[in-house]
Image 1 (cartoon, rainbow, N blue to C red):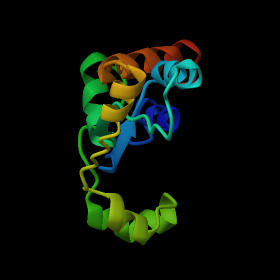
Image 2 (cartoon, rainbow, N blue to C red):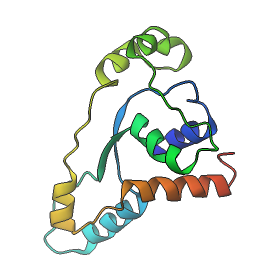
Image 3 (spheres, rainbow, N blue to C red):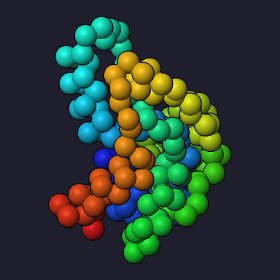
Length: 143
């Protein structure tokens, strides 16, 4: 999911504005480490939902804009009412989704369990974003 969001942000699909949708992010390297630890560490049981950072599309764009000013990274949020009106027709966003998810701060406090039980230290969000976008640029997925 983060791949497609960054591709849209870096590729200019959100150049006129970005929906303010909240999401939880974990670096794939942290997820791989968590899988290995969960498989081999004694006493680990139950589910561990990995979310190192609570953020939003807008915050992702703001973070990337500092380092990548040459890319058409959005500078403003799209108004919720606009997305509610046109979302079903141009972006496959149902009005129900817009009403329930836009402009709502997300709080996934799942990291405390994974930090305590698995010993995971999450990669800083900025590093995750920069590393991923750099790889996407090098491979030609973002121009």
